[in-house]
Image (cartoon, rainbow, N blue to C red):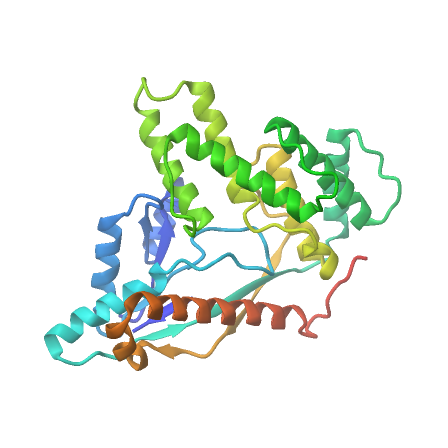
Length: 334
């Protein structure tokens, strides 16, 4: 989502990406960092100052992280709406007029330039070999489900989860996610409001783990590593659900899911691209915050929540429209 209110845009990017040569490249392209989970006041203050500039352009990724899921988005974080409201209100205090400021939803979808069948076959073979699973057939989908079952069973065993016999896969995914989340919170002695987003919780817990890593009396190395691995699992499986591939069995959805499974099984934190992509963009209708100025004055929280939901819907809807676009046709693998 682009927040447009100077000619070159600025980009708000997670601090972890500013390492090595990539960090230098990002800085030269107008990117600056934010430390997720820490309430990065310096970064927030810088963002507000940028937004106050005449004809400023700001690119923010409101999901707050990469889900590795090409056709589905995670809940938007409200900061992407709240920050421009704050900046415009600050201007209004001086000029006595709330200026125009546009939220522009931009959906990004990636497509593989070549058939992904060889990629899928190789990935399935590696995972099947790890678990000692015989392919049984050449059909990708049943093989994917057998590997997924093995991954899920391993996680349940590791965290001592015994799902009811009638639990479906989504029940098991939710139970595992809830169990791992509670374990991390208990070990770190933190709690969050019930409606606090999962990713926001994880980023705060990871920030706490970094803090405790510098305290020799806080956590032993083994516990620290186990907790960090658990937080990474929560991020990896945050958006996954049963039926994602089955509903629309495209190359991209197969590889999305296989990438998640490989991250878990082979302990890969940042997966490498599996093939050449092309990026497709779809731009939604802009929303002028000026039209919501009075509503924002009356109820800030509700206005921000309403616009966050509206932007999320537009981005998700445009992703689905691109998936069914005839250029090229959907490459079904089932």
